Length: 254
Image 1 (tube, rainbow, N blue to C red):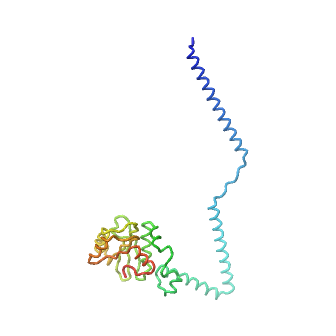
Image 2 (image 1 turned 45 degrees about the vertical axis):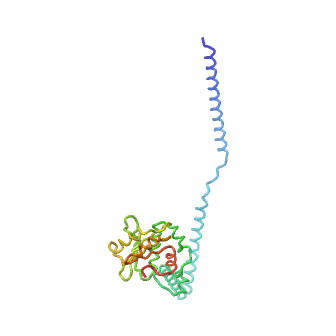
Image 3 (image 1 turned 90 degrees about the horizontal axis):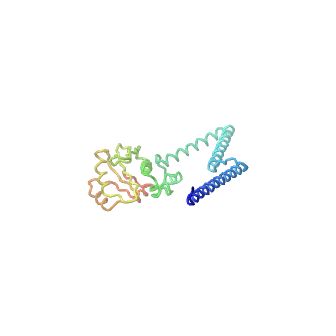
């Protein structure tokens, strides 16, 4: 015969089972209602992302402009062959001259250099802030590009990285000499240990006639004192010196 306590326990279990079953049925009804509402809702076609649509329109506009210019050139050459050919040759010569002047392979008079963008540059691309925003590899290549602007430079090799023995950019001069550039895109000051490292490698290991340490920040007083005590002092180019060089100043080997 069941005791009152056992009867109460069984009643409690049956009540809990009924509540659980009721909750499951309510959840199933809500899920069914949601599926029916979703089925009745009209489906919208997927929209193309705005960025892709804008790029597609830009490509179409560029293609249309190119076709329009090509049609105009063909019509002009057919109607005025001599004049059109002369204009095309002059435009190509101007574009080539501008490219050579901007890369430093052609030295223009001051007025023409400013018009071609090869003179002292004031734009953001040659400010210290722009150099500081680069990573180490970009800064090394930027220094190589800056070196090639000098007509005395025949070419450059970028070899920065681990175990570079102090060599980031090797400058080849038309005279046959080699010049070493150590690039420090640092926020802190460059210390004397860097001066001693470069002084011990640029002649005997890299066979260079001179070396320069270029930084976007500055040098410590100890580094400047150490460099002053060397028989052949290095060129220490801080942020201000780099800005002067990028604005048309003398390169470190001049």
